[in-house]
Amino acid sequence: MNQRAAKARQAAIDLALTYPEAWQDEPWEGDLVVKVRKKVFLFAGADPRDTRWPVGIGLKLPVSKDEALSLPGATPSGYGLGKWGWVNIPFDQGPVDPELIGDWIEESYRAVAPKTLAARLDEPPDHRP
Image 1 (cartoon, one colour):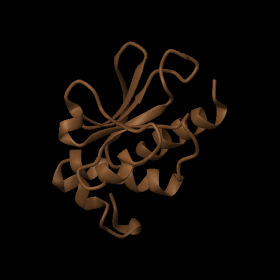
Image 2 (cartoon, helix red, strand yellow):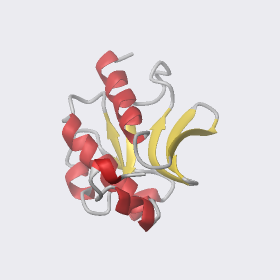
Image 3 (spheres, rainbow, N blue to C red):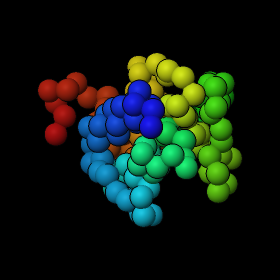
Image 4 (cartoon, helix red, strand yellow):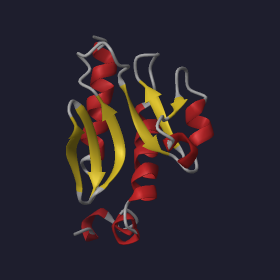
């Protein structure tokens, strides 16, 4: 198992869980996702110890899709999701800038969350519910 990749994956999950009404789910055995209400905004995939799968995340990136796809090993998400802006970003192909990942997690959240929840991100931190 690639420790750096596993840590990057966990950091992405932890950050995603800080968004309003974000919660962790396992809709398919062994596949972790982060949702806002009932909609997925981050696919985290299988446990990093399962070497059958790459370690990384999937995000909906309507604005940054092409930039994300320029990363080594990045691919449009399967099952038809790629055509809707979903991108798989591997963490085991080399280092990925954590700040960039943070920006993309926010973009994915905003793309999926109800407008009222996404608007909370624009409020000053001391005014958020």
